[in-house]
Image (cartoon, rainbow, N blue to C red; front, side):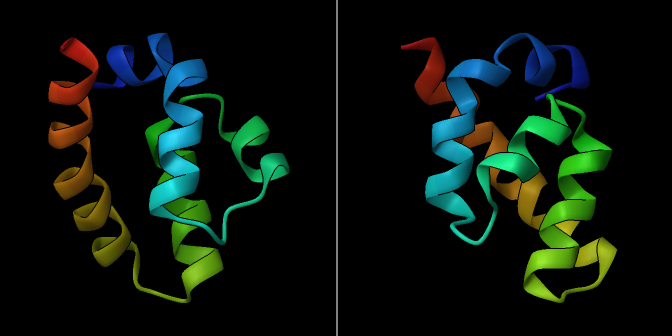
Amino acid sequence: MNEDTLKGQWTQLKGKVREQWGKLTDDDLDRVRGESEQLIGRIQERYGIARDEARRELDDWTPDTARRSER
């Protein structure tokens, strides 16, 4: 999923993001506003993982989410 898609579908995806990364707060998601780099940073911060790992998790998750959203 590219940045434009993430931003465009952010309202719909926020719930799915919370399901995937339950440690993220509503405030975190409001601040992210569909910016992938912001989301990666929040995942990294909340889960105490490396930035590369957070990016990999997001990359692994987003193709599945995009396919489900297209149905």
